Image 1 (spheres, rainbow, N blue to C red):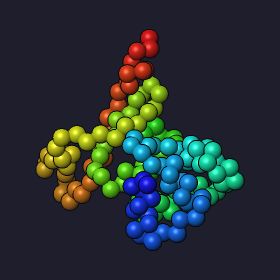
Image 2: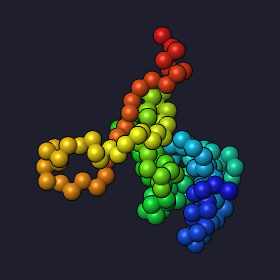
Image 3: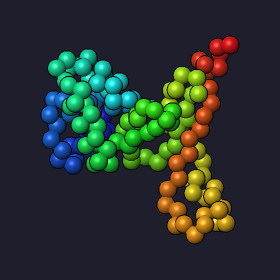
Image 4: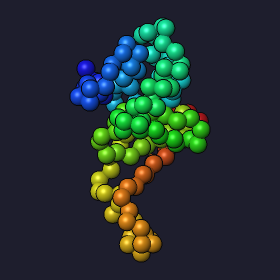
Length: 139
């Protein structure tokens, strides 16, 4: 059983067949699928699932705080089920693959007091970009 499925059960969220298959698709490490990718994978397990069910369920999961929306390329939203473990993202500038990373130290500490302009800073989002081994091997 996935961590996401267990969290949803613990919340008492009604797990229909559609919701269950969507949660199963989102299971795993380094999962950052677009809604269309979630739909394609879900339809492989439950052919009758509609695109609307996927979009609605993803919206509910985001509203519940169980999945976060990630945008790294300025276009497609991706959905990250790793919503309860602090992490940043490492993105390949070639193929777009995303990996969850946990750098040492607190990113909030990286912003000097003089650069906070009086803000009570509560969150920092850092995205690292580079080329994955497969893309780096290509000329």
